[in-house]
Image (cartoon, rainbow, N blue to C red; front, side, top):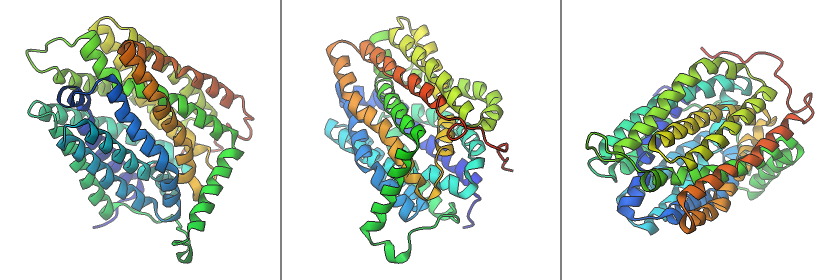
Length: 420
């Protein structure tokens, strides 16, 4: 089969992963609460198991991607994550769910860093902003399809979306084997591929680059507080609606339909809000991107706190949608900003993996504490503390903006190139 060009491959990859992910995750928390019988602490511990595995293997797998092949690393990720999701849906047992979460986290490390490094290699860092923004648009559209599919399957059996989502990841891995190009990556020399020293040198080079760039160290800190905050929200928002706020009947349908409506509404709003902003985001330089991210995180803190304190279903829905829209807007901007601050393509996947460790450490380090707050006091309290945990990131963005603009936050010399 003919290889696709890199930009189209990225759009295919973005859309297919969004379809598989939303199919698997849209009503997963309902499955965990209803069928598996998990409480607030166990819900967070599932995320902790995923993040501990991610933390343990993120840098080693990033080094492998920089040493052997970014394409092979991405393909392997789909197979491993797919197996984890299938296991989650096949066995309604807390132990299996925690083990499968760790497997998903392990699989995720193979694509984390590798996918961004692959894109930068194949199309160039200067052209990534457009691919990220267009890919995010495709993600939103395919996520809508995944939400609808998940809700339809969940009305039959709550396990079906997880199993099908896992199978979609496996299918994507097979497709990528056939169509994904890798023409501009130079692996380690053949005589070095079996040597541990080559992997160690790649890891050391990536670590030195992070230590030498103050902005990358700040990004690690930003990711830490972002991870801590998102862990509480991602694991507990469904339980908050089910147990604290209450979900009204929708034409006599199961409450899981509400979760499909909420996720779909967030995506529609994100599409509507993002469309006029995409050209501006594509042209933004590093300093502008940092300012955009600072503003978006400030809105995120306010939205998450309002969601935690919401006493009515209508207010909870409005604040949930505001949080999701802001997160959809910030993700491609953050990815572009991070890659714009990595100068050496040879260790790009390793450096991204190192910075991602901040997010992982925040999630597994802060997640159990927030889960314990939810069990000891209330889910509402855990969500509120999680929202406030993001506030130090605002100060770190301010620090990034005060770094030497000529060296670290300068605008690009030429506009971002367009991809036909």
